[in-house]
Image 1 (tube, rainbow, N blue to C red):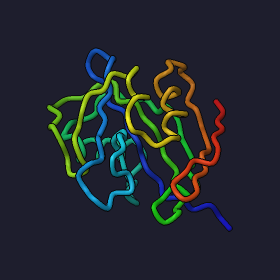
Image 2: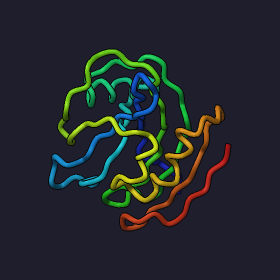
Image 3: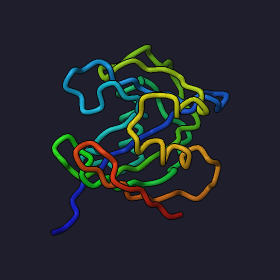
Image 4: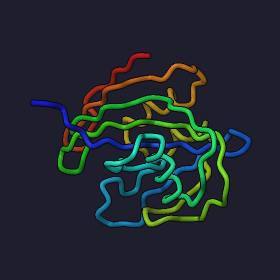
Length: 161
């Protein structure tokens, strides 16, 4: 059977001093699969978009800002991650530059600037604790990982560069 994941973007917007990252606290929608967790910004790719355009659109929709410089930090395949066990494939970006003003919240929850070194203290998906250090490690090579999930729990993690 062919692998036909939902293709998505996940972006981490850096503050101008590059010490903080914009996160959304998913606390606004009771039926949200991510309820209570902190996430980067992003979402599903539209059929007519490339991943860079999709990332820019998601950041515009979720944070009201326009992306400047962006770097692809990696890709992750999440078999079984979706609410109904759907497979996801994510393209992860760091947004180093932006214009505009970030609102206090969006339709998914509160937006906040979190010190990068404090990310691990937040309520995150367990898997995020494994890949977030790679997003911010400064190694210029992108990483490419596989992180299977079952019933909302991470089963394993492996990656290469």
